[in-house]
Length: 73
Image (cartoon, rainbow, N blue to C red; front, side, top):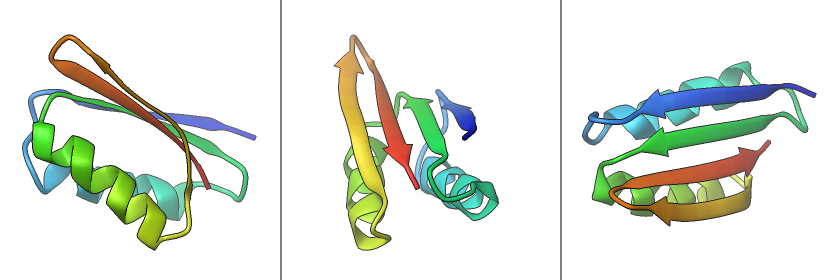
């Protein structure tokens, strides 16, 4: 199992979502994807997209103006 880290701080929609989808295409079943960002809309859109793609959300946390979402394919 691998862990893919995406740093999309400072990026606005749709970049974080596009990067998440690219990472999911590369990831093997069971791999983890950690996304760190600052764009508030993306913090809402990424979990919705994960649900739609049947990807497990491991954690979703806010630290100051940054958020970190961890997914498992």
